[in-house]
Length: 204
Image 1 (tube, one colour):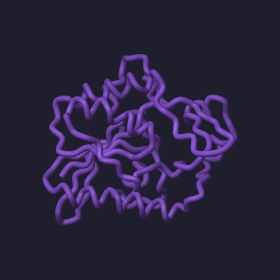
Image 2 (cartoon, rainbow, N blue to C red):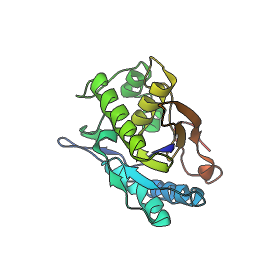
Image 3 (cartoon, helix red, strand yellow):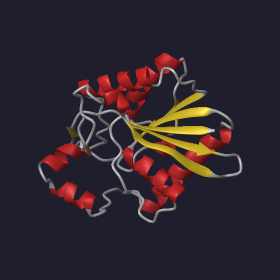
Image 4 (tube, rainbow, N blue to C red):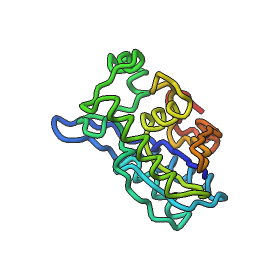
């Protein structure tokens, strides 16, 4: 089967004093999500899954409309910061050399969930999806940390957060019934090239 992991589109910045930020998509993010759906329109999907976080759910909506599939929420592919009271797009942190950016670069972990628990739930959830869809093509809208975690698992890397997935980037994994996993592509974003829309740290 082919597992397609999609990072969410660009959300708004949100900083709260209490409660989970869980921001919605920005206007640019909604445009990114529509372009993503257009780009994938020629491909046949058997199922569509999404993280419960709003930015992932909204990214899935145009793809759901174009495929006729109803997104299934999987709590196990929520991001490691799902309970955080703030969300600041990482390129904003980088542009201002925010201390939080430096912490990320140095491998800091600012979550109440320990890395080992995050790893277990992400890998377990995605492997469950694979097991349910032998011979299918399945899309999952999720998060940069989730994508890093699973691809690092497939590659056998010790460092789990090893690259930057762009907004609405596509990452393809071939998964055989025997348990073999192969990465087919990483960070596909041709649907954003030349649009003037933000991609992430690296611009179009």
